[in-house]
Image (cartoon, rainbow, N blue to C red; front, side, top):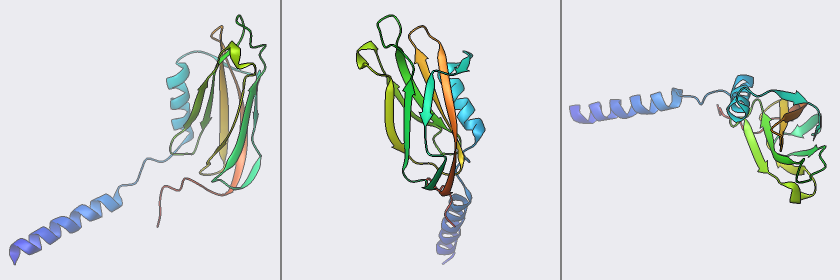
Length: 150
């Protein structure tokens, strides 16, 4: 009987400790860290990138996003990558797409989840190593990516 009680207390204590552990909150700082991990100390300048995302979305489960970059896409001058970040999702680095001059156009379209009202940032790396960006604020009325369920 004593062994059963000890086992039961151990199991209850283990379940309680797991229930109390919550995942790390998604923050603007996490997005800045993800961007820093990608670009290091390089300067990211505004311009050349056009990020199109609706300013107000009813449901964050499927948000349309398009990114285009002003580039001639020649062998001498082209986009090598486009990266997309968001500040309040559990994973701030959404997608990275590698491109080359044969792509013809530097553009991508996708759908993403947004956990809450937040800023989305697109960064393009050019063949000369320069980094360009655009950002958009999105108001989300019904959030996706819910981390806590009560």
